[in-house]
Image (cartoon, rainbow, N blue to C red; front, side, top):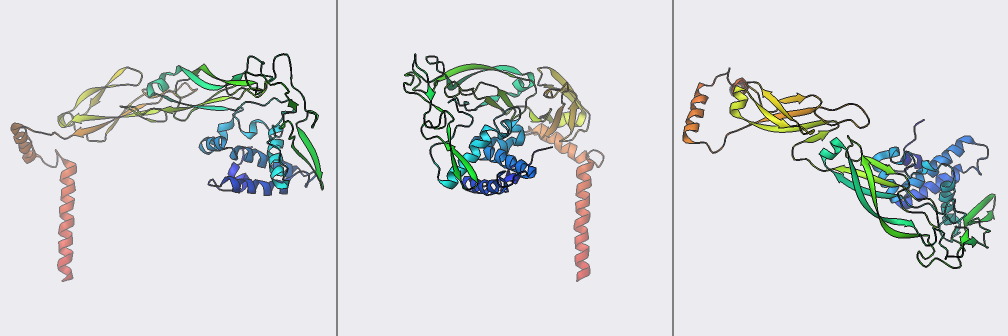
Length: 385
C-alpha cells in the first residue's frame, strides 16, 4: 500500500509555517492518540502516520528533501521517520508535543538513548559532475569535515580510567514519568538531558561528547547513467554518534554541469548544428562528435530545411541500472550568409530572379496566400460601401 502525502496526512498545505505545522499535528495527535481510543486499530494506524509525517516535515533538511524527492528521499534508511517506525523517534516526537502542551520542559529527549548513546546526524554533500562523467561513471574523492569518534576515550566521553555512571534522578532511563488524568506522560530527565548517564570526569579531548571534529577523505563510486538530482547514500559515513552512538549516513546529491554541445533529455542527447545554405540546398554531409568520444557522419539530403532532426541510434546516455542506451538527435539550422562580396550578392540576386514555386515552395506559397487574403479584405470593404 502506497504512503499518503505527508502534507495531506497533517491536513496542511506545502507553504505551512513551523508553528502551523505543530498546531495541526498537536490537534490530530490528541484526537487519534491510542490512549483515547483503546483497541481502535484505525486510530493507532493514523497516529503512527501522523508521527511519521511530522517527524519529517518539522526538520528543515528532511522537509526540503521530501519536497524535492517525495517518499523516495527516505528509502533504505534515508533518515526519514519511516526508517525508524513506531519506536524511539515516535516517542521522541510525541513527548516533545506533550512537553509543549503541559509546560514540562527540561531539554529535548534523546530518543532511545537510555544509555547515553545518540545516533549521529546524517550529512549532505553536493557534488557537480560533467556530462561525460555521468556517461562513463567515475570514482570520486571527497574531503568532508565531520564528527568522528574520539580516540582518547573511545567514544565514551569519560576521562581515561573512568566511565559514565547511571543517572540517579531517572535511574538510567533518561526519562521521568508523570501522571496527569488518564494520561501517563514521560518527559526528558533534566539531570542527564535524556541520556540516562552522567559523566563526573569528562574526557579533556572531546569535553565529554565522545566525538571530535575531523576532516575525512572518502571515495564514492558514481555509476554510469546518473541524472541531475541523483542521490547516493553512504551508510555509516555521517557524523559519529554521541558517546559511542552509531554514526549517521552521508547523502551525496549529484548535479550535472551544463555542456557546451549537448542538452540532455532523460537518456537522449540533443545537439544543434548550423549548416550552410549551399549544403542545405544541394545536400552534403558533416561530422559530429558523440558523447562516447567517437565521431559520426551525418548525411544531409538536398533541400533540407531548418529544424530537421537526424536520429543517431544508441549514441545517447546509458540508462541507470539497465542495459539500455538512449539516442542522439542532431537538429540542423540553415545559416544565412553575412558580409557578402559584390559577386556573391550578384549571384544571389540572379538566383532570386530565377526562383519559382518549385525551388522555394514554402515562401512562394505563403506570400501567395497573403496576397489572396489582402485582396479578400479589399473586396469585403467594397461591398460594405
